[in-house]
Length: 522
Image (cartoon, helix red, strand yellow):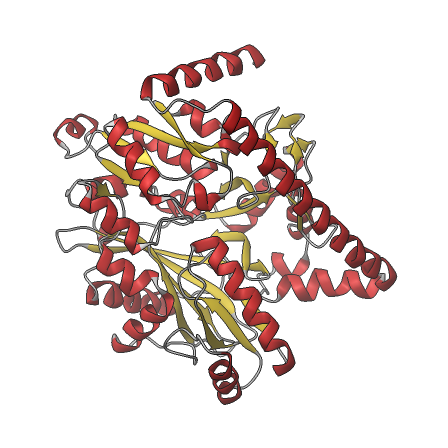
């Protein structure tokens, strides 16, 4: 990619409508390309690394996402005040919100992602199922539209047969999903799924699918430009999940044969072309025990696990996103893609794996990140960081590469042993445990692997302790909610007593002061 050509692009400054490690990833891509980056931050993220690394940073409101990272008018106002010509949404928040894309376009901003029509066709899950079915892609049996009435949900579930899945119509990332085995649990699960979807995506609609089990979760990465080029970058294995939240990803999948890869990627390319999709996206499939695959959804955005694909292909997906948004053709063709070695990613989250993966908070008092051959870190961590409870608990991603899967696992073991985070409970112990499990080493896994190999055995080994943990978890949840409300009240009072200036000049003075403070800590 010609770094000097950016001066002729229709944008030279990018607003990053996100936070955490993905915001840092996008900032780094901007810097390599010669683009200016604009960060946004809530009250909870005043000292975040993405704020300190960006060229400019603007306050957008209180800690609650609905009043900051999900508040479209505020984001557009920042874009106008900063002079940004483009917006990159990252993943989560507004990344798959067609209304946000349309608002950006109406404001004269270039959205680094698919156009509104593709967002509607693919980002909204029930519409994506209908589109996939029309394109001849096999889909999981289920409702073809969102379910608003409880009686309708009971009727559909009875027709499909239990177990079923409730899934958020407007989101992804494991949010708004509930597994229902018994009709008596359907109503409470519906309420929980709708509430979680509303909080995560601003849209409480859900739909029903037949649960396929045992199954593997396989996804295909693709990217398309405005010149008619559509290219896939192979598949990722994402079967290591807990409660539908991915924990470990790898590429390539150890069970996908060349013939199966050809069928899955061809189905993906056909689907993408049928809706004139532009920019990066991922088609997700369930792989059944008989080798049949079923379309789940398309994530119309960059994904958390994109680094494993980047490592086995050598393609920088975020930079390609910018290239496509600038109206340029992809810098490679399908024939240029060569898969090399194996890559594995561990998500490191602020959760307590010894206590039902409850969200954790606290201050990072010490940090040692791994390095060495074949190791990559995507992280928002630093010593002194106060981990908030308001957002997704993902803190960092540890990615390794090896000439084959076994070398990648050996490197992951070594890197996990080096990785130390003190002050906040994280999923590091879980990742270390997984890398020693015979089933994982043999690639004998499914989306139920964690429930069967870890959760069930822990409960059987000590049911009394599990019961105490369950009781304790309710107390902890109540305490965390109380602390969350108290923190919100404190921040609101600070904002009332000492309102931040809205001028870019004031924001930059604060940014510079925070950077000087960071340097003093080093």
